Image (tube, rainbow, N blue to C red; front, top):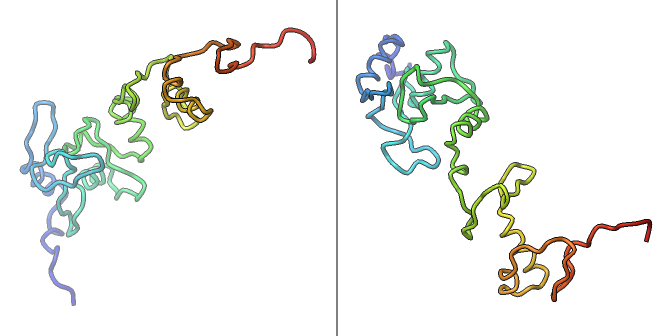
Amino acid sequence: MGGRRGFYSNLLTDSDYLARWKAKCDIKPNGCWVWLGFKFMGRGVTDPFKGYAAASYRGKNGRLGRYIVAMKIGRPLEKYEVACHHCDNPPCINPDHLFCGTQKENGLDARAKKRYWYQRITKCKRGHEFDEENTQRDSRGFRHCRACLRYLARLRAGWSEEEALAIEKIPAGVKTERRTYMRAPRTGGSP
């Protein structure tokens, strides 16, 4: 029959596990229990000290955040549920800093805290500022630089690069050497 792998782990209570894990942490002044053991490197994490805490629990290896949230809520997490951090510190395993949520809720939480990576980008790839006047949002909420969109539309229309970059913004109805832009609004009856 099967071996004794994980036998000792079944003798430990959840509070025993928590005490063992806490002993392997660096307790910070802000209350974070920063895990000093092995860490999974999450998406976008390049610093090996900022990965997600990992260890074994009841004979299975996995992320400690998920195990601790499962202990906290009293049931295993579903596949679609994730362990979210109030402190936004991936190696933290303090149960008071962790909560159960979905991936969507985690993304909304990150956006509300201005931690979403896309929000940190303040300029487009050509160096134009993303401000109210120069930013256009598409149906999915992604930002686009109006100056760059204007430049690309002019290139598609057959302009040279110098012409496309030289004229910043042309008001509606103005005639230039090149062509008429956005016909002036009609005044009067039918044509």
